Structures are given as structure tokens and as C-alpha cells.
Length: 93
Image (tube, rainbow, N blue to C red):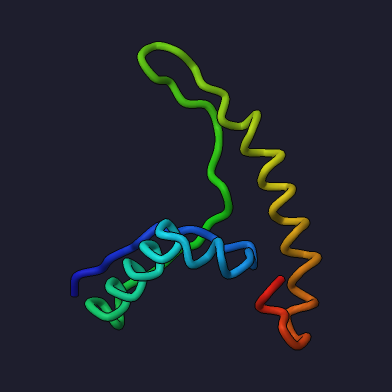
């Protein structure tokens, strides 16, 4: 049977106005499509921010300089907001 693995994006429990942006909306549509077309063999992975070094036209771009602090910030925001998710109007956080 054919298999499909989609690497998507972790949402970090971000506010809904960000999650409703085109980027996240497009990712969620792609996830739904994969899981509907491959109900038993489709897999969606939602990793955190992926960073490292990247070479472009012979120049090395240190994505980790931005990515590592951003990942820590997003993780700490998620750790703070997730316990609040059971509160009324928490979808506004």
C-alpha cells in the first residue's frame, strides 16, 4: 500500500489570529488531504522550528543564530499558555 509522510509545523499553542493565517491554514489543509487520501498509511509530523546552517551561493547562513533562541521562546510561551487552555476565553490567549 502506498504511504505518505508530510512534515508540517508545530503550532506552539499560538493565538488563533496567527493560526488562522495563510501559512498555518495551508499546512492544516495539506494535513487533512494526506490523512483523507491515505487513511491507514498517512503520517503527519509536526516538528518544532528546524534550524542549522545553510549554504546559499557559497555563503553559509547561520539559521541557528535565530532559530535556537526562537525555539526556546516559543517553547516557553507554549509551556505558559497550555495550562491556561482550560480557562474560559482561553482561545483569545
